[in-house]
Length: 244
Ligand SMILES: N[C@@H](CCC(=O)N[C@@H](CS)C(=O)NCC(=O)O)C(=O)O
Figure 1: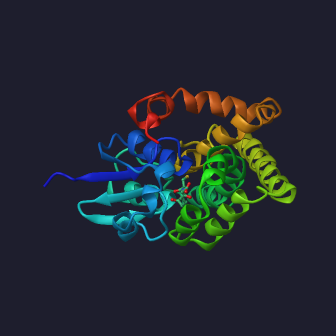
Figure 2: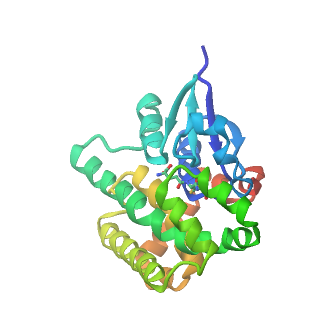
């Protein structure tokens, strides 16, 4: 039986791009199910059965559900070993995982503060109290509920922005140091580390373009990664990037 891969994702979401980057790099075709975040389709009961966190992306492989973009990417590389994206050397693989963890723990929260302010605040402000309460009640993750409430009120605090900006500075600095031993973040090989970090470097440099100017090795890495066919196919305007 041919493998059937389905991806539930949203066009502009960094985590969705992470999994699309992996699928495309490995040349794995997949069927898209777009989840419109601005219509809160990620809170639909049917979607929550697949992804109890109410987040994108979600992968369904021959009927088996896998969630978490980083877990999805490791799963894909394990199940489809052609065109490997993880070093076989355990030390290099550990180095790769450190960057993947940094992407999840630092990259995503740092992106969320400016991105949610830009994409969600006006919409939440326009909602009636009843509409807003429904959205909050349907949001599975408590930290997301608190962030929605902050946006409906005063917006994120200076402290939250300072923390996000500090995380951006830190990730750029770590990339700059790692790339002394490049050409890629985990060394010789293009890996899931590069794929995990790229959507955040992309998002940070949209908010703070000066970061790229101040980090020349990261800027060089960014130019090289953006020239890869799978990366171009992920970032160039398409039906996927246009999907909400
Ligand atoms: N750790 C999760 C995080 C997923 C996540 O936060 N996805 C975002 C998009 S990047 C989302 O679904 N946000 C819901 C929203 O914006 O309401 C993963 O890596 O898959």
